[in-house]
Amino acid sequence: MLQALRGPVGSSFPRLLKIAVRTMTGVPTVSLAELRSLLALGRARLIDVRSREEAAAGTIPGALNIPVSELETALKMDPATFQSLYSEEKPKLEDENLVFFCQMGKRGFQATQLARDLGYTGARNYAGAYKEWLETIR
Image 1 (cartoon, rainbow, N blue to C red):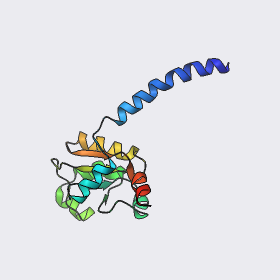
Image 2: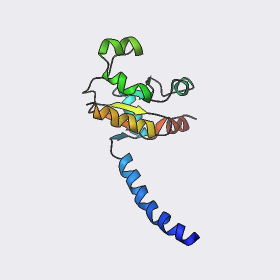
Image 3: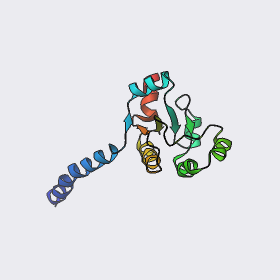
């Protein structure tokens, strides 16, 4: 029976892994080195999509915190409402380096997909996420 369980599970795992990798690579990403360069040049707009509690414990300097659960509503707001709620200018659809990130990568990926679906053509995911950022500053 153990062998019977191994067969189907073992044989489907590589296929599932390929699907997951293809899905995660379905949005444009930015590497740590590229992100550092963009930030140094002032050419990236960072959005931390983690919860307020997570972001309050630490974030990438200059990031705006919009929890992923609020993101769609925020990106659909008129600019004045966005400004009043987040104390920053609303991103424009044509912004080139609108970089989303979370703790591990999944919510950042979802946020990037959502933003691109809403017409933010320059939306990108920092796949290394805050975890990678934090590990490099220690």
